[in-house]
Length: 217
Image 1: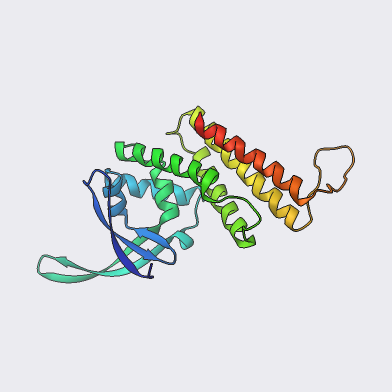
Image 2: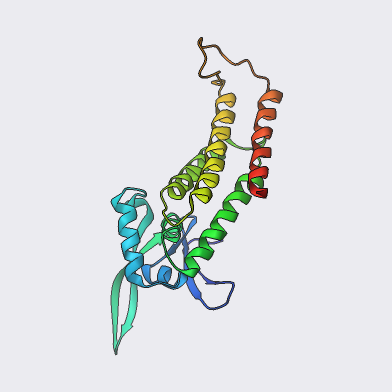
């Protein structure tokens, strides 16, 4: 998909249609578009975004871009600088919004997260080193967001965070094995773990089976 491209996003119920900006390998929405997406008022969106930056959950410079747009105001054409926010902000806001569409978004995000962890990226010999780094950053961000949201029930939060934590551990294990840093931890004597490729992958497959069990609950 081309950079700096505008596409039209429409919700499943057909009630909301939004022009989505694609740039720098992510999607960007304005505060007004997020309000429309989550069926809430713009003031709530602004408050959630300010809180996200206040607690330093996300970095403003990395997730917010100001783009010049020409708007028609009465009979005048006025150039305005409009802030756009990337997918990281959209996800974080979606976990905070208290609306029916916000609930649907959280259900969708939870399902996508589980599918992604279990099916989307198989941890095997074909995965590239840079993918491991990207995955670790993603699951870390999602784990932090999930754990900090009061709108999720304790059971929901604990189950999702357990999956994210275990998956991050699996990524670290594979990464350490690739760089020959794999060791046995929490023992009385530090000793290198002389793992073979086969038994390292066997342990990772056990974790994958655990993810599948969690998904089926």
